[in-house]
Image 1 (cartoon, helix red, strand yellow):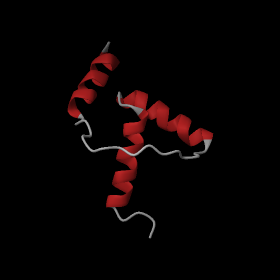
Image 2 (spheres, rainbow, N blue to C red):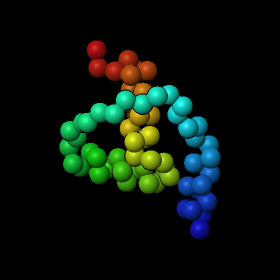
Image 3 (cartoon, one colour):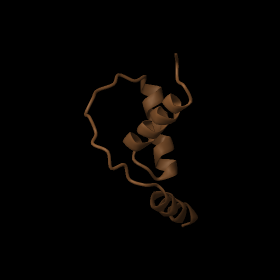
Image 4 (tube, rainbow, N blue to C red):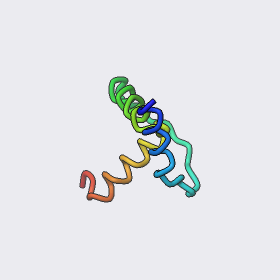
Length: 65
């Protein structure tokens, strides 16, 4: 019950991304994609949104130059 409430709260706190999205295909290591999906479930977000947020944060910090 507490976990369900946490997920609902997390979803409400996150702002939906309004930007137009470009469809693309990435080849990720299976273990990395599985970990991302598990983390997305824990946070109550879509795996796609989790990857977008992670990539945006990485690039904002300067990324691999």
